[in-house]
Amino acid sequence: MKEILIAVHVEALPEGGFLATSDELPGLVAQGRTVAETMEIAQDVARKLIESYREHGDELPPSLRTAAPASGELHIPVSVF
Image 1 (cartoon, rainbow, N blue to C red):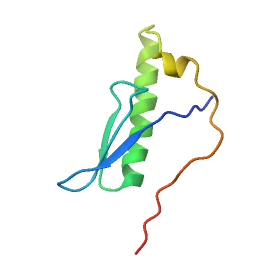
Image 2: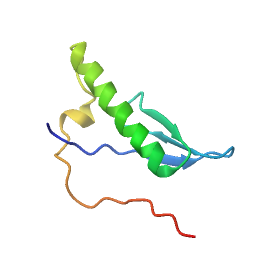
Image 3: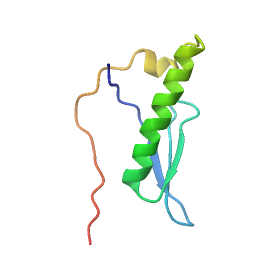
Image 4: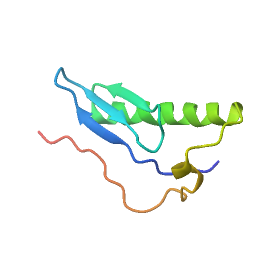
C-alpha cells in the first residue's frame, strides 16, 4: 500500500466545528467537531474517493497521478489551554 500527501484546507465554521476541502481531490468535503476529527474524516473520504475512481476506471486528478510518496515536513494541530 502506498501513501501520498494531499493538500487539505481546514477552516473553522462560525457555528462551531471545522470543514476540510481539497483542491487536489474534488469532492473531498469533511466536517468534524475538532481539527483532528475533521482530518480523520477527510482521510477516510479521500481514501473512498480514490477507491471509487479506480473501481469505475476513471483517471485520478492530475495532481494525484504525479503525487510523490508521503514524506517531508507536516504540520499537526495541538490544542493549547
